[in-house]
Image (cartoon, rainbow, N blue to C red; front, top):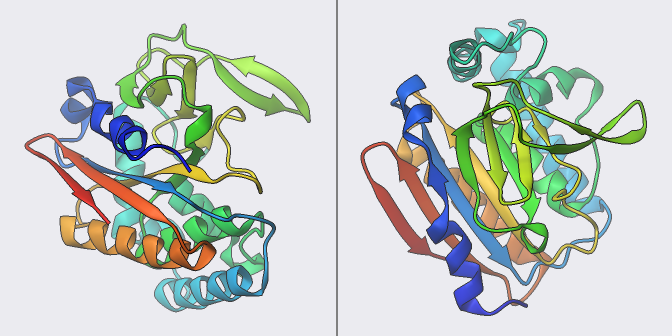
Length: 246
């Protein structure tokens, strides 16, 4: 387990650039730092959670495509605002919803949990191994020079975002491209991850209350993965920032 001050310091130093709020003044990021997790491979509990998310998504969607949902449509508009084509690079929520008919992926207990919560609460949600971070997370519009550690055609590769693209990054490079499209290999969650950072993204019509509700749900599931789980959260918006412990 990490020192409590370390767990609190990374979200406290996180930053969303004014240029991002210029694109979407309604944007909010809830950062949830969690320690004491006992991860491991997917199991019956994580499978059951994913099955409940699949059932809920099927009921919400009915015969409609994901982009017909207001929550998905808002993110499509946000992607267009910085020059990305949402039909080609889909936000993480839409990408998961499109996988529901064939079944959501089973990855590991941590990833399964946050994918399920993303679908259940209809908001993009990403998870990173906090121990692999170099400095604090920042959401910025890219210069195009930043490095992005990824895999292309099964081979490790370093790519660069498009100038103006909205990216999460730290001192070592981009941790997630196109706001919430694809995460870096360097900070991905693993079966031995014990300390993690989760980023919950919100645009209207998602309310602050709904955003905190998703975080609450996530913490409940993580506390089933370890008796000593600790969590610290921070909500960042264009008008205010709040900090809270769990």
